[in-house]
Amino acid sequence: MAFPIHRPRRLRRNEALRSLTRETTLGVPSLIYPIFVCPGRGVRSEIQSMPGNYRWSVDLVAEECKMVRDMGIPGVILFGIPERKDAQGSCAYDPDGIIQRAVRAVKKAAPELLVICDTCLDEYTDHGHCGVIKDGEVDNDATLELLARAAVTQAEAGADLVAPSDMMDGRVGRIRAALDKRGFQQTPILAYSAKYASAFYGPFREAADSAPKFGDRKSYQMDPANQREAMREIALDIEEGADIIMVKPAMPYLDVLALARREFDVPLAAYQVSGEFALIEAAARNGWVERDRIIMESLISIKRAGAGIILTYFAKDAARLLSA
Ligand code: PBG
Image (cartoon, rainbow, N blue to C red):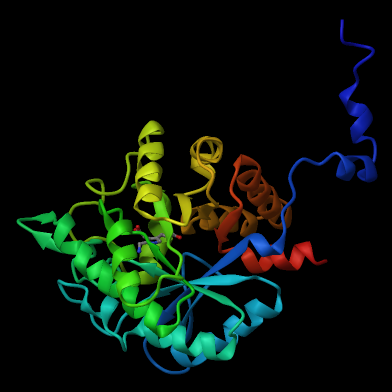
C-alpha cells in the first residue's frame, strides 16, 4: 500500500526541491541556429511563414552570426538560396557558390562560432529534388558524386561540420572518403540519418524555394509510420562514418529519438523543423498559447527524449530565456 507513505508531491513543494530533483536540463551550449543566405547586397527579408526569421545576403549574415555568438549559441547551420538553379544543382558545389561565400564571411567575422553546412542539392536544383533525375527518378549513385563535391567545397570554405540531408544511400561513406582524400580528416559529419518525408518542412520550402516541382520525396525520405527502419538508417550511417546522428523532425518523432538514444552511443541531434516552429509561433501570435513557456517546454521535451543537440529556430529565444 503505497499511500500515505509515498507522496510524490513532497518533492514538488517549492522551486528549490523541484530544481534539486530535476532530471533534464537545457543549456545554450546544446543549441544550433539555422540561417538562410540569399543573393544580393543589404538584403534582410522576412520569411512569411516563419516570422522573425530572415533570408540574409552574404554581406549581412556575418553580423547576424556575431550576434548569435554573443548570445552564447555555439553554432549555426547555413542554408543557401542560389543565384540560379539547374538540373544538376551545380551551385551546391561551386567553390564560389552562395554557401561557400557565406561560410568564408562568417568564419572571418566569428571564428569561434561553429559553422555547419547543410549538404544537399534540393535548394540548388530547378526540379527541387535532393538528387539528379534519371528516367523520372532520383538517381542515387549519380547523386553521391555531387554531394561529395559539395561537402569538399564546404570544408574548403571553412565549414566546421558538414550535414548531409539528402537521404541517398551511401552518402555518408562517400562524403567521408572525399573529405579524407582532400585532407579534411578532421571535419565531422552530422548525418540527417532518420529524416522523414514530412509535411512539417512546409515553411522551409517557402524560405528556400525548394519544393519539388513534380512528385514528392517519399522515394528517399522515410515513411512517418516507421520506427525500426530509423534504427537501420542510423546504424548504416554510423558504419559509414557519421560522427553525429540526427532525427528530423523532432517533436512528432520523440519515440524515434528515445530509441536511438538507447541503441547508439554517439552524439544524437534533433531538428525542430520549420513547421514545428510555425505551429507554435502562429498559435502564440493569436494569443492561444504562452510563447515563452511553450518554447521551453518543447525544447526540454526533445532533450528529455534523448537529444543532446537541438537545431531550432527558437535558439535565440531560448538563449535569451535561459540567461534571464
Ligand atoms: C534539405 C533540407 C530540408 C530541411 C533541412 N534540409 C527540406 C526538405 O527536406 O524538404 C527542412 C528544415 C525545416 O523544415 O526546418 N536540404
